[in-house]
Image (cartoon, rainbow over all chains, first blue to last red; front, side, top):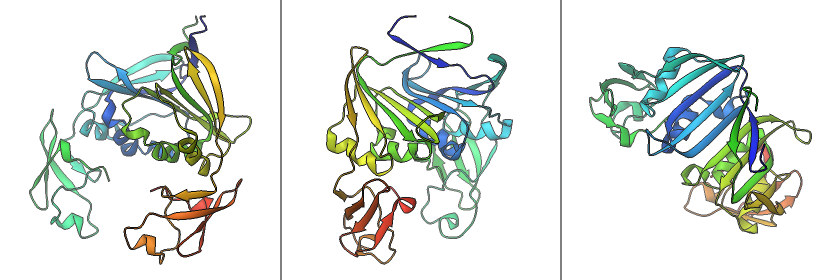
Amino acid sequence: MSKKELIVNAIKEGTVIDHIPAKDLFNVIRILDLENSKNQITFGSNLDSKKLDKKAIVKIENMFFKQEEINKIALVAPEANLNIIRDYKVAEKMKVKVPKEVIGIVKCFNPKCVTNHEEITTKFEVLAENDVALKCKYCEKITDKDHFEII
Amino acid sequence: MSKKELIVNAIKEGTVIDHIPAKDLFNVIRILDLENSKNQITFGSNLDSKKLDKKAIVKIENMFFKQEEINKIALVAPEANLNIIRDYKVAEKMKVKVPKEVIGIVKCFNPKCVTNHEEITTKFEVLAENDVALKCKYCEKITDKDHFEII
């Protein structure tokens, strides 16, 4: 073991989320409400990546997600993949999948939309799966990825 | 090297901030504006600690702070200490020090305070150094640590 290395325990049980675009790490954290989690969490950001410009990775001990929960992160990190760890080994691999409909999470881009003036949960139809664009079910305006504001 | 371990490179040059109360990790991130940093950053949260209930640690590659910058984090993490890393070795150790005056960073707790209604930067006198309490220079109300809202 060289002095230049530092050991971090791999997680025993939990979830590793890889291939998050670095600029979206904090959006993923918001979507999964990790800021309020009591679980042991490690984040790495602005790491080199072959697939992405710069990537982030999140490891969460003793936490597992349902498919519908992880699909929410597809809005900002469509290339993310999850490794489910059991007894230090990868027990399962999961891909995020952009849902057909998005309820809540994102704010409608249209300042005049009723959802920005009354206590109404936003609701969108997903138009494009790769470069996600969301069509508001109330005002019909389209909020594109560059204008996502996570609620 | 056992399979149960995973190597993370120690940083070559940069800053390690240790002994951050886990619940205040995201406040430290906000205060240092790490969300917008392009540097390689690793965060660990809800780690076991002898000193604190649960601690967080932040490692930032190629980033160094001035004493006045790091003193800002003393508001939420008065026990934090910094290790300045040069060529993989601890070159310097720094302690955060609660400043006598706080300009900006924290929102005044008093909803009627002028700083909450006009575009005025908040300004506080620091009353207690350990359990930091801030006396507003405009309305004289005291914002205690449990009510800090980082701007």
